[in-house]
Image (cartoon, rainbow, N blue to C red):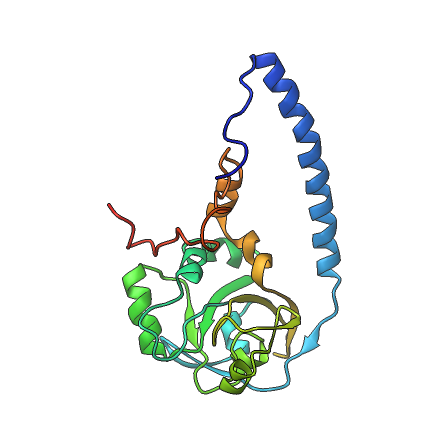
Amino acid sequence: MTENIAPDIVDQETWRAARLAHLEAEKAFTRQRDELSRQRRQLPWVELIESYSFDGPSGSRSMAELFEGRSQLAVYHFMYGPGWDEGCPSCSFWADNYEGIGVHLAARDTNLVAISSAPLPELQAYQTRMGWTFPWYSSAGSNFNFDMGVSFTAEDIAARAVAYNYRTQTPMGEEMPGLSIFNRTEDNRVFLSYQTFSRGLDMLNTAYHILDLTPKGRDEDELPWTMAWLQRHDAYPS
């Protein structure tokens, strides 16, 4: 259990004083986050030289076509390998946050898609089950997931050493999650400007941010593993 489960009970004036003191810390964090975001926007870009092809509902699409005419593309690397019965539960938790936001991102010159290595029919069946409508593409048959550092070869897994989140570590499986940001120029050149993995994906999960505001927080410290409580949204007891 989270440690702050027996708080002091105080009067309104004392509570307000404590809240205002904490507000100053929150404001300092917001300023630090804004500065970190500014620095992120100043990172250099690297051009994608290889031509990738993705399967989607309208057929094969090139990397440039995934932008849907916009200059910015956010790709969520959804853990769904070939032959899996269903998508990763934690990626499904994250994906629940993407439904309906595409129109807002489009208004800011940005497109959001998910990409997985499983064949398209497997993705579509799971997407229908989950009730999602955001664009989801298959990278099956290409090196895209491997080049982006979210899929791993059998040799890497057997050697118990994969390059994930900018360090070599023991693999947790053949697929891992991530987010990549790409930029497209007017002549359809595509550049990678940012990637994040592991805890860097927390910023995408609204449910976790809401839990962070509660007295119990995420309440995961005594679980066998982080998110041991998690179910796909259609699997919780009614």
